[in-house]
Length: 415
Image (cartoon, rainbow, N blue to C red):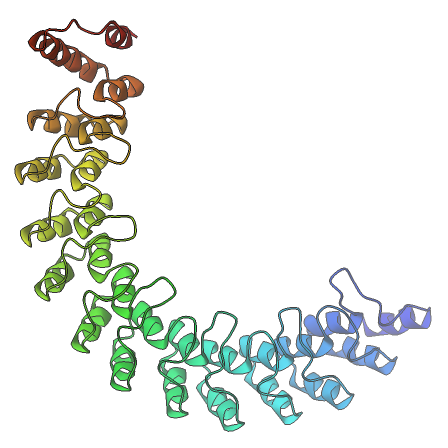
């Protein structure tokens, strides 16, 4: 509708008026690939730098309209102007995979290190544009510059599985330990890029360095189920007890990686080390229903009474066989949690009748606990059969201790 554009301007339409997103008509035309309309607007004086929102040059860069990029630059468009995210038109072109438009912008003199938001090099690395990465580096871009998350372009390339771009960055001298955010080795471990893990370790990456959560690359690999990458890290000498955050053994236990659990334990990991919540790897395995991993830990000598109690967790999850095994291995059946509840109370509070009966068979006390009592938990859940069993056991207990059956408990049972 090129003629209508001319007619409207001829009738007095403000050529650089903005829409609610701060875009001029020129930007809109470019955003929708309407080059004829865009040229008509330029002919009637549309500003190439007008608009408080998306700029015309950014719109042309996103769309990949190379000729329009050149025309706008030739008419004085500010090539290093930023959008609302702090990106230059070059970064935008790269972020949308528009290599030809990106080259046109470079020819126009756009700075390869410009922009307070995402850097051009990071955008090219993320998209895996190997040749563009090489070109940007040749133009003296800061190869180890960080993005808003403290990541270098190398880390970004690895985080998105762009190995060719990552290697191009390494060839250009990218630091294997650079970045105040996620490290390159952590990114490769998370993605499961085994060869890159080996290459980075061989180039001097600090294998025991921690991320913002206190995790080593080994823990990250295990947390994301990347066994091959984890083994590559172990081969590189990564410590199985390293990290101030989640431990490797806890991560493997949580994912149910039975073989990795056995390997880590064989490498002298502290089997009963606790995480930030006071849980051992055994407790973590049980909390996530990983019975095979839990048994591997028990075979390795994991303590049944350490940390947040494993028996309470198995009771909560209704893991009847594990309850029996833990009790058989010496778990204190009447031990209390932080709320003063025994494992029996916990089982009942979560409606796990079978687990509750297994605990009773193991000798769990029906009156034990300084917090919520087993009978109260059964009453709250409406476990009628369990209440009947408790009344009989409580009456026997009361008789043995010379007491009458509590009227308060009787009323609770009747209710």
